[in-house]
Amino acid sequence: MSLRIVRVFLVLALAFCMQRMEAQMLPNPYGPPISLESAKKAAAAALAEAVKNHWTMAVAVVDPSGDLVYYEKMDNTQLGSAKVSIAKARSATLYKRPTKALQDALASGGAGLRVMALEGAVPVEGGVPILADGKIIGAIGLSGDTSDHDGQCAVAGAAVIK
Image 1: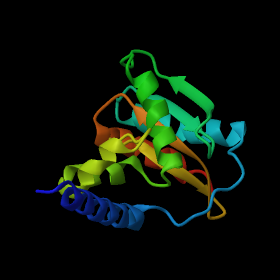
Image 2 (image 1 turned 180 degrees about the vertical axis):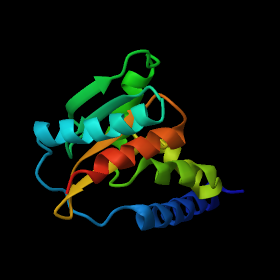
Image 3 (image 1 turned 45 degrees about the vertical axis):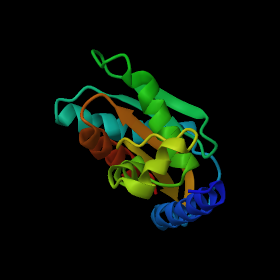
């Protein structure tokens, strides 16, 4: 196969991938950064969900640019979850979608494997954008249990911000 044909194929595959990813991206514009008070409120709701289910978690809340606004780790949470929770939150805000969408794209294989090439993308459930007045003001990321439990807690935290 000639190099030119390979290049054409790669361009077409990338275009297909971007169409699939675009369909999952939130159409919401970025808004002003989440306040510390709101970040603490979202984190508290997320951790309350974890406590209710007897899960230990680390939670991170970032602003729209991915900068850390608030972080908290429950006692006995695995150490690796500290960095993972921050990475999930950053991924959710920078790519304007829950990290579950990236996980699902990767799991679908084929063109979805290109998620692995996106800088800062974390294709593991547990990161969710935070919306206020229809705008993305940040994101919340959780880590510490299974990814679906992390996602459940992240959704609970993001839901308290209006």
